[in-house]
Every structure is written in structure tokens, then in C-alpha cells.
Image (tube, one colour):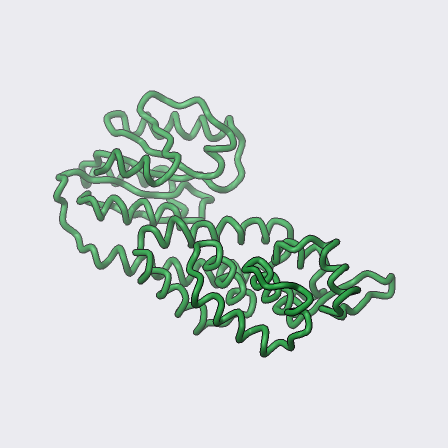
Length: 292
């Protein structure tokens, strides 16, 4: 739980239930009994968050609030389990993963991740469920509704899955082409980079994966040891449009004969002017067209 407890705004963000509706449910159905600060501001505990998340899942699934508001926590939990076993839509999966994340329910989180991969296949699971989950977590972190350890917890598990699935592909080089993957100095968010490297490996490229925080001068050293055909990098952390454009020019000068793929939040936001050899990858489908 957050040290200061959850605000009603936190509950709204995490559950998708408007604060006004939560107040009505409290007053009309006694769904929650918040504590109050000395200045009469509501705050909530983990048990309150779990309750509103479970109620939200059931109401979204068609249950009536007057009915579910009367249930105790054990009945709510059991009904949620029964309902979600029957429903396997992607939003349902995301909601359940968030609930397990907030509780650090390790066994349930791992079991659900494995279930999603088994039912949807690894690629669809990543794109349609896990990356949607990361977007939600990013929003929650930005508004302060979760703390960093919860984000790190999810990232660590799914990073392990990505690496394990990539390892299963083995190393060949059916295409006879090498693709270099790296993140610039200051960049630590590598989930999307790992996924694109997975796709490149899947389609037969020789993947050279350098990972996070790579000094620019090391890129030239790599070229002295191996022929690189394509370069792939991502920009997630905040930077100015000018700094991004300068970096891309330097990258082009270092890789004059290679196609350079870039992706990431900052690329979409800043829309930089691109050197001729640099291509923005908007999503994984577009990337697959180039590598397949």
C-alpha cells in the first residue's frame, strides 16, 4: 500500500469507477467505509482497494451493484474467480493482472501469465495483453496511484518470459543478415526492444543485442568486429526534439550503409525530422513486414 493510503482519486484511476460513483456506492450501499484525515479527506487501505477492484470487475461483467455490494470479501473473490474463468477477453486479463500486481500475489500472477500465453500464443499475449498492461501501469505510476516497486515487479516477470521465449528460438541466421539492437545512454526501458529483437530472431536474423545504456562510442567498435545490416533502437525517456535529431544524425553517420529502425514514446511525441536512412516503426505489424 502507499504510505499515506489510497485517495479516492487513486481508487478511481485503478478501478475505472468514477469518484462520484464510489461516493454514491458508499452512501447508498455501504460498500466501503473510508478513514478520514484530520481535515476530513477520505483515504483507503489495501482491503478497500481489493474490494472496489473486485466489485468493478463484476459490475463491468453484468452484475448489479445492489447485489454485489452486500457480499463479503470472500464471496466477492469467489465470484470474480468463477466469472473470469468463463470470460477470457483481453481487458479481463489486464484487470486480473493489475489486481494480482497490487497484491504482489506472485503465484496468481505467474499462473495467469502462463495461462494467457498458452491460450493466445506468445506474440499475441505480448501485444494484446502485456503491453496494454504496461500502458495502464505507466498511467498509474504517472499519477502516483502505484509505487515503483509494483512496476518493477511486473517488468521483471515479463522480461524473464521474453528472454526465455527468445532463447527457445535458438540462434541460426537463415536470412544471412545481422541486426543490432541497443538503447542509448540514459535509456533503461527495454521491454519493447526485447520484443522486437525476439521478432527479428524469429524471422531468421542474426540478432546482436547490446541492451540498455550503451555508450555511443561502443557502437563503432561493434562494427569493427561484425558486419551490421540493420540497426534498431528506441527512445522512451524524456528528451528534446533537438537532442533526438542530433542523435539520429550521429547514428546515421556511424551507420552510413545500414537501415536504422527507431521506435518509442518520444519518437511518437516529438516527430523528429529523419535522416534518409532512418525509419520509424509504429508497431510490431509494420516491423514484421520489413523482417518477414
